[in-house]
Length: 329
Image 1 (cartoon, rainbow, N blue to C red):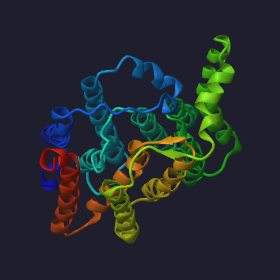
Image 2 (tube, helix red, strand yellow):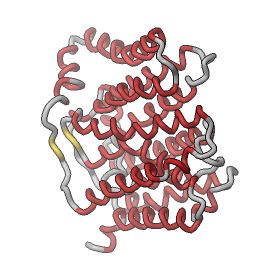
Image 3 (spheres, rainbow, N blue to C red):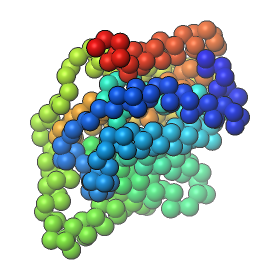
């Protein structure tokens, strides 16, 4: 099945849309009103959720945002030549993992935050060029700062960006300060706005302080959850064991980019300690890094049958989870 996504053509780009439709059809047929607390919403996502109360509207927005992110993610992988050849397999992997668990396929603040995390990832890779404008370095922190205002636990990616920046570029105090200032600017602007609204203390409590402490899990540790955990460990382990093939025939620049992706899931794990109320969709914190590692692993396998087998197992797992209510009611 993945064979049809191998050529970088407009036809294959359009095939991503029906692929997403097949996986998300259950959400359209049986929309579920997922209720979650306002405390997980950041300042920038609160207003959007206030005008998207209908379940159908939220699923429509989810479909549009994921499709946009998939093309953006695929473009990053292809533009920076992380894969062996330009394809749309990366977009397929990105979409696939949004349906690996139940209630991950919902419009939520984390989904919006991931959009800016992708932009930060692009800025990080683009900053490798020593002649690049310092605005690109600034943008790394700036986009992560915006992501934090959508979903607080994404603050862990600020620390990831510091480590990743050391991998991509040699240490320079001036550049580090630019990156840090980029992160602080959106937070400072929001704090200024809240101060003018006489709500600074309330905003700090809602967006920051309340997230530091024992987290509460608002989902069951059932079979679906363990499938998510096992699938994530499997994908990461597969990438680790296949690291030599992933790095094979890549330049020093591309090796650095891939290394940034390898350390990203470590920080994603830490995000569980920086979110006071944790829902099933928190797994989406891993999706960018895990999708990239899955995509690179599939690209590096020489055995096409093995590639198709891995994809088939993951695809059928997603189908089984997403359509379980239709067959097992």
